[in-house]
Length: 202
Image (cartoon, rainbow, N blue to C red; front, top):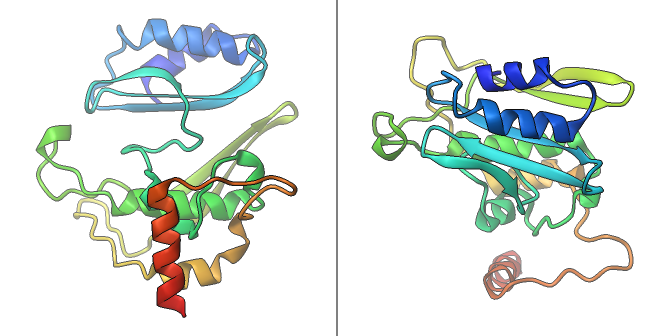
């Protein structure tokens, strides 16, 4: 969890805003080494859902992010097209949170780390299992949504190649392409990627 989070939680009653303020103060003093902090919640002060991300791995400051998705390294638009076959721009598009998490963490598992982040070249950091924590007003729940039994403690993580065409076919329920009655505008890059995909499928 990290010393900064533990210290901030100790001083928080029940406010997400208090947690964020506490973490901003404690991160500078915490002896957390190489740590990524990713926090999401509803800000009563600002009346909206917020995501905050920071990392001591590459000097990324702990700040509120405009991106809907949290990941380290951050998940790009190209990643989302590969994982979902469509842009995901609004949390309301998510119909199956567990399956949505499986795709995001699998995309992160593919990421290769190196000297820039303070690791040996060619390192993969996501392995073992993925746990999803859900916090609501009625309590908290943590459940395992994905495991990689081939990973072994003390050995390098070597992800098997993912057939993303097959992944999308078997995980089609994870997100709707758009909200009812809304229009999703694609960037030029997203539009070209979608057109190329359609040509390959024809």
